[in-house]
Length: 331
Image 1 (spheres, rainbow, N blue to C red):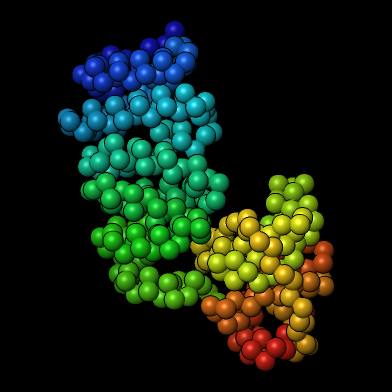
Image 2: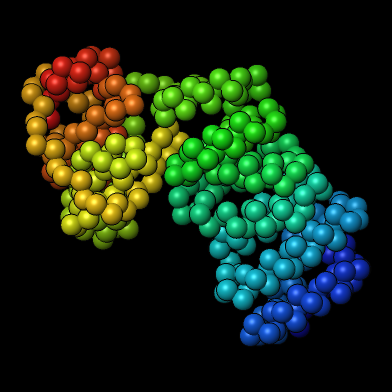
């Protein structure tokens, strides 16, 4: 059976902190984890952690190893220490890109990233999140670690956390904020945040040609949320909602991503129809079943159609925005 290399940096750290490690092992045993699984998990950890531990002085190296052992044992107890799981990707792939973070806040870095990874994988782009964190300078306090992880998750598509992320970004040092927001080095962070807070579609460098901005939803048969074709209606915290299958979802959306959140009350369908005036700039020909303007930005609409299991966010352009204001958009 494989074992931890005792002369490795990882092995030496385990030995130096044997009391803490043994306490964690006893706790895992008391929770019913098979000893072979525990041993395998700790051995698997070695190759990924050893290069990182070798770069860190004490006590940070020891703190990192203890935090990792505690985290891996918790994941093993919950049957989440498996190849392909986002928590394991953090340990095996992402932490090694954050040596400065681990040097300043080893325990907070491990715990915060591992806790956040499942939500990021479900609702955003985990690879982009990891990239944004990996290019960032060190987070030197527990609060900076938490704020930077949240901001990077929002920037990678976790739209549900937009307001919290905007607040968190405003608290970060400028260089750290620019990195996790993927802004240029000379970007004025307060100005960018203020503009986006006022307009969820505002972002530096964003091209604003008319057309489909994003598509959400899809058939349940192919992994989407709905069995029947959705209907765009007004409702929810962003003013956009979707009815399907006798239920309703709020479309929480901004320039970085979107989420469909179940609503307790089903919004009514819109009764009024927009008269003919201009055509929607879309790459499809279909009968529109619902068209809901964005109350926060003129000229952007949520559209559902007769033969699609998805809804589209469509930017109309200047002419379309004027026609929409006059209630003269072709549906």
